[in-house]
Length: 275
Length: 293
Figure (cartoon, rainbow over the protein chains, first blue to last red):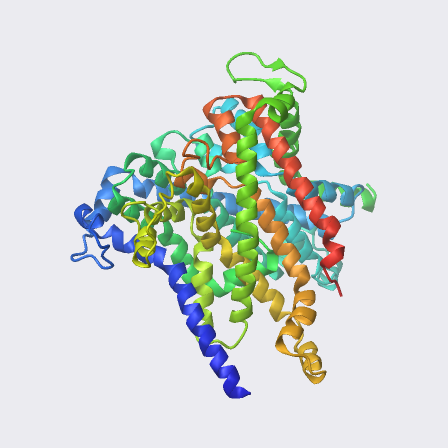
């Protein structure tokens, strides 16, 4: 029985090697192509490893488009959305989970209902609003409409509900204000939920293509996703440069993934959130 | 002030920053968008009220909309079952004591977190008909009639499905792994004592106990697949012709390329209707197959 199980596990291992190969080959191919000369790119049969790695491809991408600027914009936009979302969502969730007021449950249901509305419905009016306020091509225009989603409110409210009331009762007897309870008791106890929400908001916004595409036209305001897309538009088949750009585009995500893999996967299964 | 009123006031102070934003960018936008769908507006001239004309045009006359609807439906039918089935198989393998399972899980999950734009750029290169890796492989194994993936209307949508399955199968996999790990081992032990073989255990124990996870994975995948945009935008630009044009792509073009704001809003509401119905139907039929303890 044990031998049978071992044989099965090793045959499954072989199967997974093929699967992992298919999953990773595009990454390898991206990297390999990024180091080739254009002549080598079109060589037949395809070469897995370039004869001489041409790191200058990366420098060339950097010199023809403001790549550093795209990365910086993405950091600013995704970072600000994440911080603001965490702040706004945790304040709202505190009211929904810990305070009593008339109409609370109805209002919460209204928030929840908005989760069903696809982003494309609100995208058009939000674009019109941003345009009327002359906020296209600004950080405010990129950030503000993405701060308010009910998901974080919902996630944090569920988490806050699980924190025993005794903790705050003790503080309240000592005369602590509600804001004190929120900031000094509830938030520190909710670090796991807050960090999960932070990681997912950040990754989701980092990968966001549609909204930046809609509100940005100036090159200096582009985020990494539309920077990559417009770079592809300019260098359609210069594959080595395209792949160098793509490598730089995924590098931050991969670093984040390697650091927080366990945590990320735990978060995904906890929340059912799709990056 | 009574204690009750004090608490209400405090609650509203906490809610205020979020509520103002919600009122503008979510609730307000939803109302604005529904009003907009009854108008014709190019953002330059005055909006004109057209009643239900946007919707009648959409349903009865707009051949392109019918096409992008069919494309999106095919995309959903191509990706969702594949992702769910492969995700389940991978998860069943990875919860076993297979050597190197942490590495395999990481390999399968890695594409999930990278930007779809970057993923689509590599796959555009892999799908290249003349120098692409995929056609080279197919040639090596003896396929003579090599598909011109991205320029052939018959294959372009298949290419988008392949990219999308590769990109997001890891999500279904980790969800299923969590679902499988939450099934108590005592249930399996009991089945073993009763003499159930592996297949019987799988069909009568694993699948029913996993069904809430399966249901959830399908619902989430269906919702996100109906909103496909990034892949088509980068890989094919919706082409060749309109072969890979999708509903969201069509909304994008109408609103932001052709400035038909009212018409785009109408399409967005129809998309909402489609997603709502698809989700509602799944919830309605879940009690036929989803097993809750």
